[in-house]
Length: 132
Image (tube, rainbow, N blue to C red; front, side, top):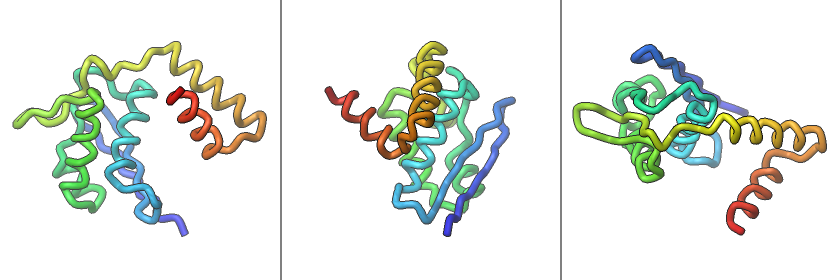
């Protein structure tokens, strides 16, 4: 049974969708970080945008604040957000997604679907190619 939790948070004229499946084998902090990465890839989030406060997001999703902080720290370690006391998490200039790369990714996903390649197989192929 799927227990998907969707929360849309509007802040600073930016609306973000966070998806969390507590029943998934993927840790919640990884799911939160993936949601932010997806919003960056879609162009919903742009450099300079602020993420919701860790406390606000934790309350909205009914998760521990340390779970949200772990996701934000991982995004910081990837160079996607800057964490500062009193300012919160702000998307960095490094986080901008190339429109060309996004178009290529969409084309790759469409071709994989056409060929009947599942998501887990596509992920494995991408990981293998990325590691090469």
